[in-house]
Length: 258
Image (cartoon, rainbow, N blue to C red):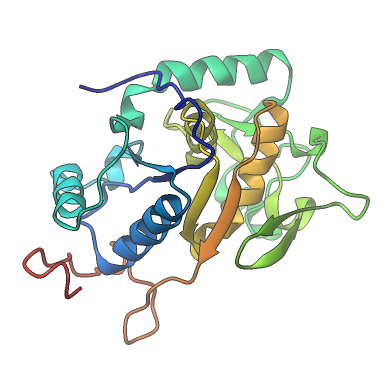
């Protein structure tokens, strides 16, 4: 059974999660992130949840969801609540976006990557063009997270203080794409809040997303989880293990050995 509006568990001081995207089967790099978040939750007698980030059909591999869940089962990593699928939650994300539109915290934008290339793809301030189709962007200049130097920062359990410039690194980021697909940042923030997530343990390749999520959390009056970003597993050629880099699927014959 799929659930559309999960309720945070009562009297649980630690709720963590693993949120894979079904772009391919589970590989060793994904297992590392899943295991780190699972062990951190269990060491604190907390709950550990699985959430499927199935929001980008063009990038998804048919059957990958089942392959991922089967591998997690074989490796003994089981969700303490029912698994939610983001593809079922569009109405919830739209309600949040509608609120941001009403409060004028977001704006429509049809700027292309080419138009933004002079600023390394960062949108900040006035649009180069407003037409259709358009994306919705968070107005970063209204953020209450920015310090006097124009930066935003957070403390990571493993990496220490991490800071970025609003103008040069973050800008006005997309919360709903031109293709009418939900952006990772908005869906992640809404679901972390809905599930009462208190701790996020994930790969350091996602650390750039944290400050964007912090901005949305502040704008929506959501609490912020504690974060810990772990090193990522790499192939012999130095590339991060990922489906994009054709990382091999985990073998399921000898899970203890892996």
